[in-house]
Length: 552
Image (tube, rainbow, N blue to C red; front, side, top):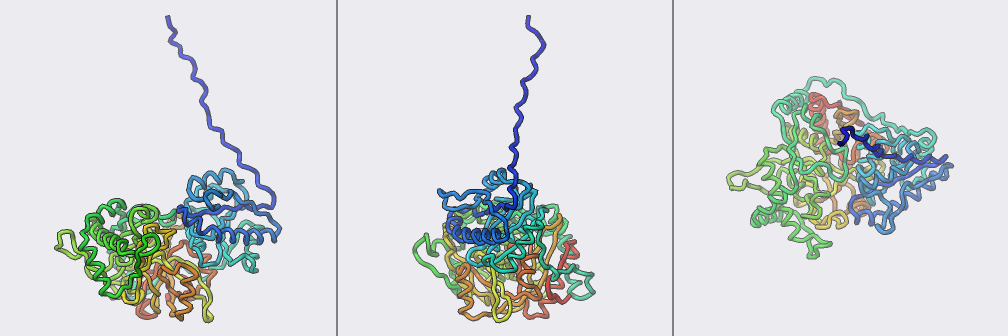
């Protein structure tokens, strides 16, 4: 006879958590977030090495020691954290209460280190080199925006080589106190707007958006680790904005259905409009006709899918999802944002799609740009202005002729009207280290004029919008060439002088690597457009902040 009494179960095996190491005295730990693309990490590593040596010297001179938090991988040829998993493993080995510096001389993917930074208990400083060579400043600003969205305290600092007194003093302050505060007195909250035609227009457009609603098409969310660029539906929906989540595989499938003759017609239209294509025959290093042909199919496919879903704006991730599949999306994106562009008809040929208007495109599926571009398009259209808008990377800048002039330089395309037309624009092959399959840009030098700049971002769990004014400068050809050669000469450039905002004020405040820009015919009209934009956002419940000299 067997017993009905069961034996007690064996004890469960419980996980044993490792104890983090203790922090060494007067030691600051460093990490370096990098790209996911090995070619970019290897190419940019010498610049990162120099920045780390410069920072090490500055920290040592202040009586502290630098301990790098992860080893250089000689097999890979660089010392970057190059994936989210790698970042999690690195942070397991770091003292959780130690002062930590994230050192960025390059563009980096913020999600590589975000998990570790969220749980790190010690003070965090993000530093970058003041250089245009590789987008280290862009990487700093993206990580700052991502940490802001995450609600994690941090400080930021920048310098050409960390030998200047300003940077050394800032570094000393952070080492001694764990925090560093910069001047942001140029920012003020929007007061109640006075009654005006622009206020009335803004309120009416906001109420229309909330009532009638709009759809933004997102071809794969989350480009290049930009956590700050992902906006939850719960924040967008109260504005009247809803996402249509689309797959880039569907975009490629639609491209494959586009007849060759239709893609060739796009090329013929652009040739007639005067766009210069710098082409060759080497697929690995030059822009080729085959790459362009694929890009024209993408342009047509994007419009047809947008029409299928009734989209009001669209964003294509491209990196990483399409970089190994088709040439760059940038040329298509620049065309979409322009009023004058090659006509595209429905599949049955019965209708021209989005005729006589841009289809706002938010590059790199940055959803802050999506909100901004959608609002800008409606305001500028209602005011009878050119609604062509784009984002730019805040790449770098220097003094010129007594004023600080920024290099705004997005990684591939802007609407041709920002250059003064297609005949003042050109297309070059995208850099191979970022774009292995090539593809052309839509580049040029932004025309002189008055612009409104802006950024919609997430802070403290709510939407905010910074608005300001700027003048686009016309610099001598040799200075423009110097700045292009100091950055990425294939990409479109804007020489921008911000109104009432210094270099360091802007860097201290800005919560993203991107900002939006749109032209107005003159300063007075730009002021009116900014007022209408402030009214839209305020009516939608977005926290509005005015930056610098703004006539409100």
